[in-house]
Length: 402
Figure 1 (cartoon, one colour):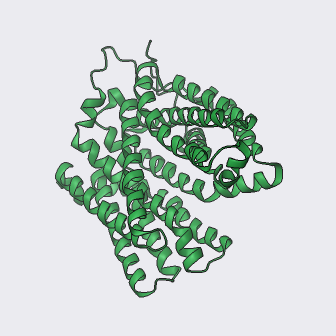
Figure 2 (cartoon, rainbow, N blue to C red; figure 1 turned 180 degrees about the vertical axis):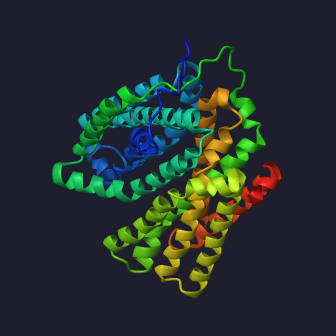
Figure 3 (tube, rainbow, N blue to C red; figure 1 turned 180 degrees about the horizontal axis):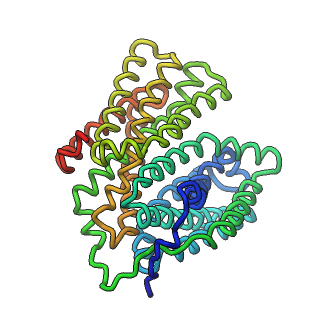
C-alpha cells in the first residue's frame, strides 16, 4: 500500500470545527453499545435463543472494540487514517442495518461482532488523527479531555434514548435510526476529513513489541485505565447504591448522575490551562491524587452516612476533575515516542486501558458487591496508588511538580 502524504495545511480547522468532525464517530462507537441495553431483556424471546447468547452480543462487542483497534492501528499507519475511517464507517453502517433486519440469533451475534469491528476502526482513525495534528499543540489537552467527557453522557443518555425509541416504534428502530444517523454523519464529515498520515521515506521500524516494552507508554496507559475505570465502576454501582439503597427515583438518579458528566464537560474547558501550568506528568499525578482523595471521602460516606446521596455524588465531582486531568494528557503522552507508528500505539493504548477497566474494575465489583460504595472506593484507591507509583518511577520527576 502507498502511504498518504500529510499536509496539515489542509487541517486548518478551528478547535470547534475540529471537534465537530472528531466527536461524532467517537460517540457513535460507544452508542452502538449503550443504546441497545434497554431491549436486552426482551431479545431472547425476539431472537428465539437463550439469555446467555444475548449476553454474548454485549460481551463480544466490548471485546472486539479493543481487539479491532489492535488490528486497525497498524493498518492506519500503513495506508492512512482516512481509509480506515471509511472502512470502519462502512462496516458499522452495514452491520447496523443488518441488525435492524434480522431475527436470526446466529446472524445477530455475528453482525454485532462486525459492528464492533467497524466501531474500533472509527476510534483508531479519530485518535490517530488527533495525534497527527495536535500532538505538539496546546489544543491537544482540550480535545482529549472533551472527547472523554462527551463519552460520559453516552452511558447516561444512550439507554434512555433506546428505551424511548423501542417504546415508540419497536426495537428494530434502535438500529435503523443508529444506521441513518451514522450515514448522515458520514455524508457530512468524511468529505471534509483530510488525510493526516505523514508519508514516510523509510519503512516504519517501530512495532507493537517496541511499544509494549516502553514503561512510559504503560505509565500513561495505566493512569488512563485508572481514570476510565473510575467512571466504569461508578456507572456500574451507582444505580444500586442510589436507587435501591438510597431510595432515589429513576429520574432523580438520572439528574444527579448527569452532574458528574457535567463536571467533566466544564472541567475540560480548563484542560489547556492545566497542561500549560503542570505539563503532562504533572497533570497525571495531580489527577491521580484527586481520584485517591475522592476514594477517601467516599469511605467516610460509606462508614458514616451510607444512604447519603450528596456524600456519594460530591466525591465523584472531585474524581471527575481527576479523570479530566488524566484524560487530557495520557493519550498524547503514551504516543509521544511513537509518532511513526501512532495508529499502532493508539490501538494498544486503548486496548490496554480496556483490559484494565474490564478485568480490574469488574473484579472489584464482583468481590466487594455492587450495592455499596466499597467497589468504587477500592478501585479508585488501589489503582490510583498503582498508577502513581508507576508514574513516579517512570516519568521525569522534575515535571511532576509543574
